Length: 252
Image (tube, rainbow, N blue to C red; front, side, top):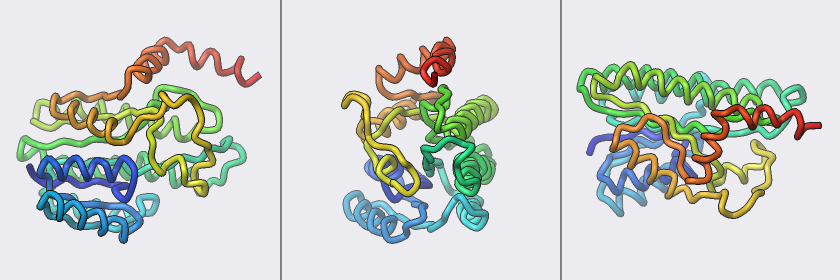
């Protein structure tokens, strides 16, 4: 099938992308901050599916980390790039540490932009390839306490769709994946996400379902994916502007 490079591959949605892509026959280039987890996942999938794997240990909030993954992509042999790395900070912006907010901009915006720029020329030349950018349903919402998260995910969603329009006729597709709540470690990392798992059970989707929906849509060349019927309703409601209009009332 080719080679897939996945960022944020050590756990959650990224690890699930690795599992499902390996099952499809993709060799893997796994990137994240935790090299031990990447190696363990790679060994597991190599043994199960007979695929090859390599690891790129990198922190995409830092220039050195972005440059390391960028350099790997510039080798020109990656057929599918999955920009999955991300995190949240559940705190009102005026009281949030600026370093964390800057790191979020780097991980959600700067890194995907630069990695796409590194990967796309070779894909266009081959007239084959794709990018999946893991954004969020928050891209369509205005959520106090998550201002920068919403803004950076909105950028990633819009950027993905615009670049998809540029490259689609050249045999390459770019997808913006916009899930709601997904059962992963994302909502358990208290040092970065101060958020309890709350809300009705039906709001939480398994990572396997979200990734399966994304890859099925990628096969069809779909550029925007909102998994889950309930979240599709939220997406269409957000397009009316009603949620934004209600926020001042809720805050009062």
